[in-house]
Length: 380
Image (tube, rainbow, N blue to C red; front, top):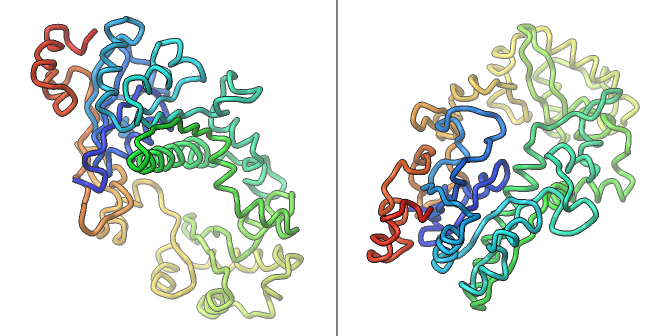
């Protein structure tokens, strides 16, 4: 089930953004077949397979991509695919004989999704890097953090997963839609530097207009403004305040018992440090729960800052099943949601060889081909 039911994707195993892009597509109903190496590469942060939830919702087979038989086997699968996803450095799949030219010769309508940090061209295209390096180059990292503090790594959400996986998934889907109209595939060059910069489009516009300074932690959304900030409560827990609009701002001050004269003009940055000190002192007079009891149902744009464990227990998260248990592992549910083509509940990650050849390749090869390949497991 899911809106992408019937879409078939070959994923050449990688780490980080490419498997997340594959997961997003599989979550929404696409049939994704992950091609793992015969000696699997390191997963980055080592952990048992069941906890590597980016690998959920698809079957995995092990292929020796350096062998002629393995390469031919993958090319046969590509004949049945709508798209391929790979996350190697530029030129690696070409050297394996699985580059775009070889794949298009087998399947002219294939969408060839390429995930890299720096992109397929440019002076850094062959240089190693990680999420933090990519967002550092775009200006996004420099803009993230508090005044007087170093740039703050925003986990790997802005680079790997926001600028990488989401843009690769979007590009692959756009390519599939176009290929179904034209009958011709194409390469999708998804680079984290491109995606991270794209995520910051609004920021670049504000900066160009002179409305966003280059001084970190002194702007509207980077902890500069007292009305877009996190405050410590009496119990040491935190609460988030995002009362940007005047009506939300004024109602917040009314409910927490702070006079406008103590704050000054909301949009006067020169008064923000003083106003922040006032709100900081006020929020320390009650516990996080007490503030939630007072404010959570009001239009003041306030919410508690919860830990990962606490988030799973919150009433709103529980009712919407934002987080779900899959094989004993709490993890996010597929998103977004659909009224009619509702995606199935995710299946846990599976190792290559966890299923028979016929099970893993059902829908990809004919019965006679399945029988032939079954004589040598996974074509290795």
